[in-house]
Image 1 (cartoon, rainbow, N blue to C red):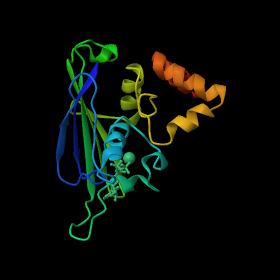
Image 2: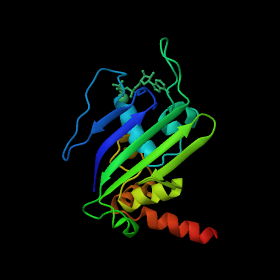
Image 3: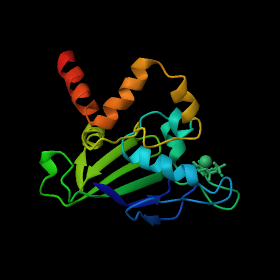
Image 4: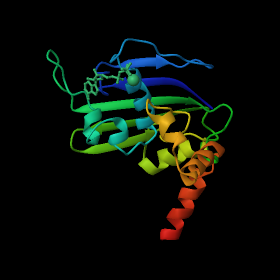
Length: 183
Ligand code: ATP
Ligand code: MG
């Protein structure tokens, strides 16, 4: 499984539709301070179902929508789409017929988020489980934000175990079990 393309529109500083091809192997994003490098990482996390505004460096989820500048009006809508190559069939069995997956999250000011998987309306939970089953997700240890290394070093053993479970692809099972126990 690998991410092949990221499309953003109205998301943080990426006000105009922007498309990035992600080639296999290592990708580097370089640019001056404030040009939007971290915003790209946050877009990937957001489309995978991140629900904490704080970890998106905002105070509410609407803060991911382009807020305007001195010469451009604010937007009311943000959308991010992540394209995934599923030719190795690492996505859950329900997606076995799909060689390509396209996951979209869209937010409108004051009306929350909507998700689509290959064009079909989906729940946040469907998207979160899809990525958890592929050993990734908004909290994947593969996404390292600027203060994360220090946080990991001082983490409690229980929190470190969560990291290993994410890496092993079993965190989706735990969250299904917790949901079943609550019923
Ligand atoms: P550094 O090298 O310092 O880490 P960076 O390339 O990671 O910088 P980001 O933090 O991704 O930069 O981008 C910050 C920029 O994004 C700031 O200019 C900020 O104003 C802009 N930005 C963030 N949220 C929004 C928003 N909702 N609307 C418009 N601009 C935004
Ligand atoms: Mg940064």
